[in-house]
Amino acid sequence: MRERSVLITGGSRGIGAAASRAFARDGCRVAVGYRSGGEEARALAREIGGIAVQADVGDPVQVGDMVDKVLEKFCQLDILVCNAGTAWQGLLTDMTMEEWRGLMSTDLDGVFLCCKAVLPHFIHRKAGKIITVSSMWGQVGASCEVAYSAAKAGVIGFTKALAKEVGPSGITVNCVAPGVIRTAMNSHLPPEALEMLAEETPLGRLGTPEDVAQAILFLASEGADFLTGQVLCPNGGLVI
Image (cartoon, rainbow, N blue to C red; front, top):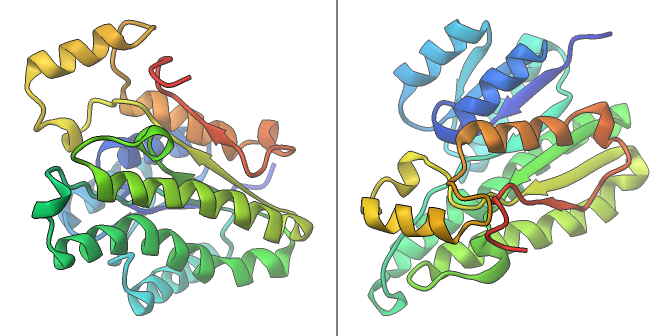
């Protein structure tokens, strides 16, 4: 079987790092995308035998350069995982326009720009798998995370629409919407809040980055060849 290649944005930490390792174990060539934290990305790339590629996913020029570097190194790209994301907690009335645009630039514009950059290659080959990463808050909304919820809801709508648009070209587009996962993004929450969320989760625990990575890996596998426009929810039953 031909070795596949994957580009994972936000690939150096948390869910992205777990996905990078999972794809490498599955025999894929992995491009670890990062904006900052170059040392982490390069160390992970060395660990898994991949490459590290830098880009601010909200910048179309940087995204184009990133995809060009991956294609130059791997000659072909089979899978795109749009995982880069940021969060902002607080009252909407306290959020500045700059903060709103900064979050949207990464969480929503980044998905648009990365997909737009890889699609000519995918369409030419009439093959390719795109996996976006949303959140359960994109499904149900979260108080004090209005912008994040809006961006992640946008990712779900984007996924469903793009799946219809590029399906005739043999490309699948699916989404993973994780629940509460033990990552740095949730490290600001006090232990008692995390414990309460675990108790509210039917499976009785919070998720791990590896839980989400396995869902992403499945959507990129042959087992998901007839799935497109779908939202897979590794959330322990917190949102059903």
